[in-house]
Image 1 (cartoon, rainbow, N blue to C red):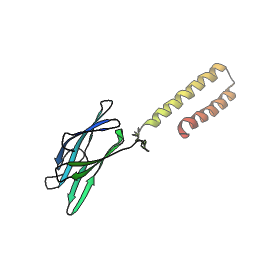
Image 2 (spheres, helix red, strand yellow):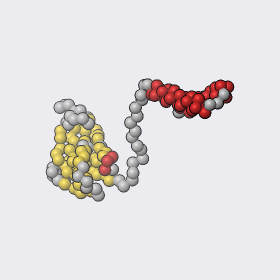
Image 3 (cartoon, rainbow, N blue to C red):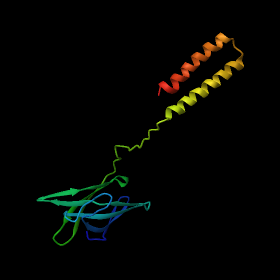
Image 4 (tube, rainbow, N blue to C red):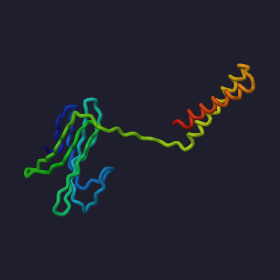
Length: 161
């Protein structure tokens, strides 16, 4: 491939925009003294969504390290293999039909969520008290019923979760 070349895959196409020396962006943070080449690739899917991939190759001493890039949204895997003698850029592409085996979940912890549950318990107990008073039960039976139902609500909302 040369710069600005296009290749097709099952769900769209990708363009090799250019090759960047020592990229410094959100993904990589190399300095001028490093020896890194990165392929800036733009993917365009069938639904016109655009994605960026940037596989890189880094020379450290006598070793060559390949920094691969995976684009989970399109199940694509890119590897910058190198540059041939006739200045062609070699990029390895792997496309997978298999669904990804994990799901990312973002959770929040609310510090005063127990206050919400306590308010719900107080409201439920108030509703029970009004229902018992409306039924016109005796004081002993009303107190026993209120105590049992309140313990059940307390357990259900505050202890069982």
